Length: 251
Ligand SMILES: Nc1ncnc2c1ncn2[C@@H]1O[C@H](COP(=O)(O)OP(=O)(O)OP(=O)(O)O)[C@@H](O)[C@H]1O
Ligand SMILES: [Mg+2]
Image (cartoon, rainbow, N blue to C red; front, side, top):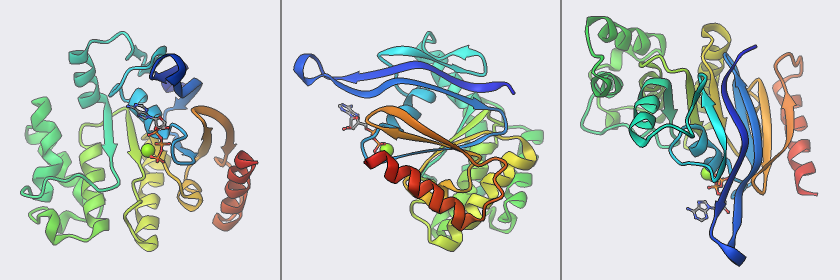
C-alpha cells in the first residue's frame, strides 16, 4: 500500500532553555490511501499540534512531512497555501460554514478560491450535496439547518476539490450521538467505497471505533496503535478494546 501522507521523526518544541517543552517527540506515521485513521490521546497530548504539522499549518522543529510525495517541510509559505487548498480538505468541530452563504455557495467556495469553478465542478457541488442527502438544502443557509445537516455541508466542502486527504478535528464533537453515527457512517463509507483518506482526531472511543486504525498519543509521542480494519468485533466490543488501550496509557 502506498502512503499518501508520511511524518518522519517529527519534533515540535515550544519555549527555550528550562522552559523547553516537546509538544511532539519523534513522531513517525504513515497514512495509506483509502485509510480512515483516528488519533486519540488526552487533552494536551499533541493531537492538534500533529494535525497542524500534517497540514503544513505549522512547521516542525525537526523532521519531515510528505504529502502525496511532496515535502511540506521544504515548501515556502506560498507553496504550502496552494498545497493545502488543492490537496487537503478540513472538517471542524463547529462546521465553520459562512453564515451568509447558502449550502451550495459554501461548498463552491474552495473552487472559487482555487479558480476552478466551472460547469463541471458546479455539477460536482450538486452531486456531492445529493450524495450526502442534502440536495434539497442547496439554497438554505446554515442557520436554517440542523447540526448534522451543517456537518454534511462541511463534508461536501472538504471533498469538492477532490483532496488527497481529509483532516478532521473532533468532527462530531458538537453533534448528538445519533447524528454522530450518521456522520461517521458517511466518513467510513467515503474511505471504504470511494478510496478517500481521512485522519480524524477524537477523544471519544465510540467515535474512534469507526476508524480502520487508531494511534494513541501521550506527551507528544505515539505510544500505541490498534488495527480495526479486519476486525469482526461489534462496536461495543471495539469500544471496550479502545478504552482498555486508553486506560493502559494512563497507568
Ligand atoms: N503555541 C504554543 N506555545 C506553547 N505551547 C503550546 C503551543 N501550542 C500547543 N502547546 C502545548 O503543546 C501541548 C499539546 O497541545 P495540543 O493542542 O496539540 O493538544 P491536544 O492533544 O490537541 O489537546 P486537546 O485535546 O485539548 O485539543 C499542550 O501542552 C499545549 O499547551
Ligand atoms: Mg486539540
